[in-house]
Image (tube, rainbow, N blue to C red; front, side, top):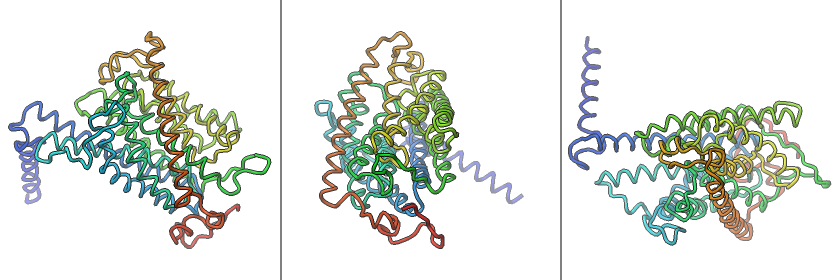
Length: 456
């Protein structure tokens, strides 16, 4: 009886709290109305989505760790920890202001640094805090993509400097162009959740970094042939992919920034279908190309489908989402092979292909598959792509955005990594690579008590 009484009191207290503490409370907006309830729902939704996207950070850490060798596991984990930690400070200092401040010529924001415009005593100010939380996890996602492509041979201090600059400058400028009322936004460019803003930014920066740091020891032979360097833990990589898939529902559906926008249901469906299609087509493409249904390729296929659907998720039908994901899954296998065997760029986890190439494809696909009925309900706008009677105009806008952002990100990242190579140093010594970055950079082993075998 006592336990039942306690439960009843707890329930009544919870209802009382809901009545008196609903956000925005009377301190912000007077009595509770339908409008203030909507603001409260939107704020809670954005924060929940932000927390889901934050959970993608360990997902990336697990994927990258599993796809690389045991002797470098702690180094990968440290990079994922630090790019989020350093990136958060950088984005608070200047990144958020550059991305969402008052525009200067459509190129960058000019105010809002240090979150100075967020007044904690107003509902609008609290919303800005919630919005900043949602945006900083996106910035960290763009940053962490690079760690996988440069894994197993990059000096840790150089990576710390990189983490600051991508979140403070490189990523926010792109974000301003598209999401901050910049010049691409004025052209009607579609990138709902960031195939280009987030993923291609990370992918193109990864390409620049992988080129300048050079391949791992033993990756390429003198005759130009490539050697496979298998990762040490496929279950860990698979866990990471499932975590990322889960977090992506916050990534895409959360980009409505509104829990009262019912298109979050459609977005969840298109996101899931594209990922499933990407995994399937990557598996079959690898099976055809290599004779076996390669697990790592299927895992990257799911991620490729997710990256591909991120831009058009709110303006395409479920069938179109399946096609977009299927193309991405096929594309990622062919791209990984081309970048490795033809371009001789060493990317241990396939980050350039998954995020750069498939991010570009996803962005372009909005100009092909967009349908006005879906775009209207989600807030994208009544836009039809080429395949639905809209002509070439939207596709051309998408192409201009993809090319201009490639030029900005790849160019600035090349400069950044070149400066780091000439100053703090970018590439670890041969001896450190042979020992493993865990011992050489951090003075520890990830798997103490186990004998680590290497092929070098």
